[in-house]
Image 1 (cartoon, rainbow, N blue to C red):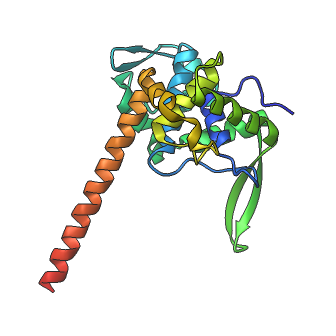
Image 2 (tube, helix red, strand yellow):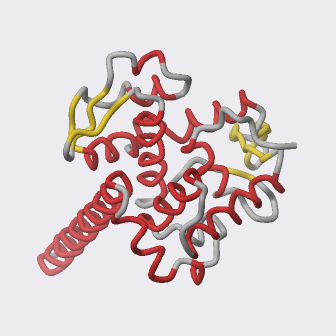
Length: 225
């Protein structure tokens, strides 16, 4: 079985995060993966001409609402005109529910199957299982090849750039040794991947600052008690 030909780039990236043994996919979490997935969504919008780049700005096209789902649901979170890295932050925000929208789309297209269960027999929870794990593994191999050097595979190259931007080699089960110098240069060749890397650096910096402020406040409170 192969993946549907209509699978979006963002859906491909999410499928690559499937557990290598259980073949289960979860919504993207952390600081890096949601922003890399958001960058893939931006690429999908550009490919389908639902948006365009002008300098460092992402401009939504008038017909973005007619793009295939789940892109209209995701682009609804974006301003008509905004810096690319801020658009990525908006798509990566929990309230955008990008992961949920993409998983639902993958289930509708047959790339994953949803399984409902209950944690501890009480709490409802859904899991998603890849229906074609061998095809996902083949996709990983294509991306690994793009990380090693130039290939005639635009889709795999774009995915490789996003993997490098977020340092997601482990998350997508691709050997970090495949990247090397070529992998690092991939990001600079793509303005969207560059914006993803910038958004991740800012998110990590903000998280570190918030943690430092919280630690300082805790120390002051403890000293005063």
